Length: 131
Image (cartoon, rainbow, N blue to C red; front, side):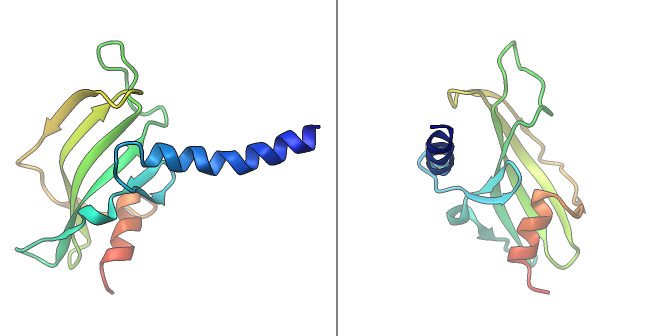
C-alpha cells in the first residue's frame, strides 16, 4: 500500500506544479530553483544587445510578510546587457497565496550590476546571450 501511495504521489506532483505555474494564464518555464520565466514575454532591447524579461520567484523564506500577509512570489522585470554581462531590476511586485497584489517597487534609476553566477538571472543570460 505504501508503494502504491508513493507511486501516486510521484505521478501527481508534476501535475500540481504545472498547474500552479500556469494558474495566471502564462506558461512559465523553469530556469532555476523556485524561479520561472515567461518565454513569450522576452523582448530584445533597442539601445544595446540585451533582453528584457519577467521573472517569477517563489518565496523560499527570503521575503518578509507584508501587512501580516505572506508573500508567495514576486514578479520582477529584468533587463540584461549581454555584452557587459550585467543586469538591472526595474520593477518588482509581490503577491500572496491567492495571487493578490501586495506591494510593488519601481526603480527608474536602477543601475546595471554584474550578473552573479548561480542565480536565475545568470541562467537566463546563458540561454539568451550568445557567447
